[in-house]
Length: 100
Picture 1 (cartoon, rainbow, N blue to C red):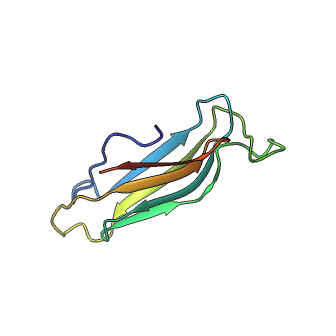
Picture 2: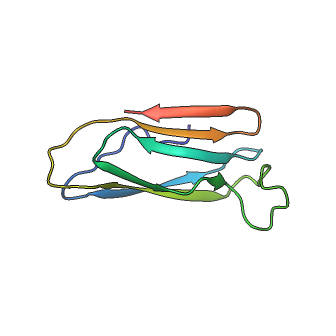
C-alpha cells in the first residue's frame, strides 16, 4: 500500500504532504492521484520513483521517494469526507488504491 490509512484536513491544519517511497525490489511509476472532494486541491507530478541517474526510468531503483500535497481550497467550509485514489504501475500491472 502506498497511501496512508486516513488523511485529515481541517481549518487549523488545511494542508498535508504525502511522501511515496519505493521500498520494493522493482520500479514503480506513479501515474495519477485524485480526490473526489471538490474542496481538496491535489498537487502531484506523475513520474517514476527514481533518480536521474537511472538509465531506464520505467525500472527505477527501490528506495527513492516522491511527494504530493493535499490542501483545502476553502478551509472555512465544514468538514466533509471523500476518496483519494492513487494509480501506479508496479512494473507488472497498473494498480489503483483508494482511501476514504
